[in-house]
Length: 373
Ligand code: SF4
Ligand code: SF4
Image 1: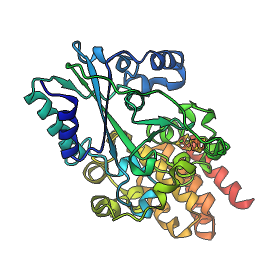
Image 2: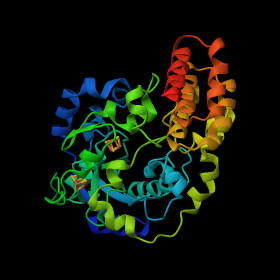
Image 3: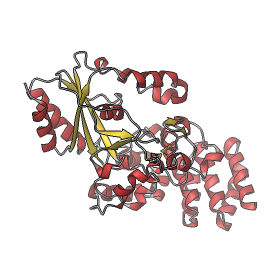
Image 4: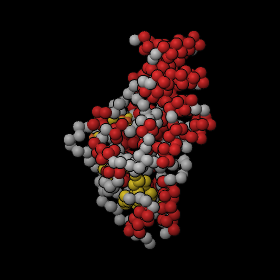
């Protein structure tokens, strides 16, 4: 039977530098939170069955322990043009391509299997709570998990919880918020959509990350400017956090995988992309939005373009208006043209108006009014 030392040695060989162990006891506090907030999380989150993941035995009936590996995803630098629009955790996400972190997890599970241990890596187990319970870090008031060891003790880490059927002595860990007293809730103050209502109380439906993946309607007017340049995800409450300053100050080597894909994520190309482009170049890396909802990507991009205040995008918005049909995308393109302004944008909006109806007509009218103001 392999020991904790053996497991740590193999995980370290595979590049994991922070490894901990906790029991397979249910995460009761999380279950209560999820159950009391079903309405706030809504349908998209309920489909993930997060409540089901709060009991490790529901995924592996003989579960005895949870091994937690923490990986650092911000160990190399990302192109600034990507950091402006995408959450860092998605930039090198290989959950579809299976050509990076997944291979290391697979190798680790093979090692466990070769030593008689069955394992599961459920996506819906509370990964951050598992890591805290295994003594590997603490929480911030922004709900992110901060490593005790990796990425200059920052939140740009990914805990991976592996449920196993062999018992290992648990490491002493507590679920604690460890923000310094002198930080006067910078994350709460800075959240552009006021999604963090109070320490560790997030209203998911107001969070930019949630809105960029799961919106079903055109983004309400009041949130379009606050959502700024974010297209998929949001790192703002991590960027402003003083606990993350040391990580951001590091001089890092560029992440070549992300640098290679960055040209495909250019805002103009995203605005004008068709489904084959999306399925080839975008979805495999940022996959929460299926191709049938490509309108959502385009709406997010149009809103971000409006917020660049850069009129170089006006011809691309005009072209996109002619190539799209979804009224939510068209409405946002109109808004972006109104926000960018200038004679070319105004003339285009006036030209679109006679053929428009419903939501699109309303948005064009508002955009023209915005220009006049
Ligand atoms: S991810 Fe962005 S929108 Fe969500 S809580 Fe943090 S700052 Fe607010
Ligand atoms: S910004 Fe301040 S309150 Fe928020 S997580 Fe960071 S240290 Fe904690």
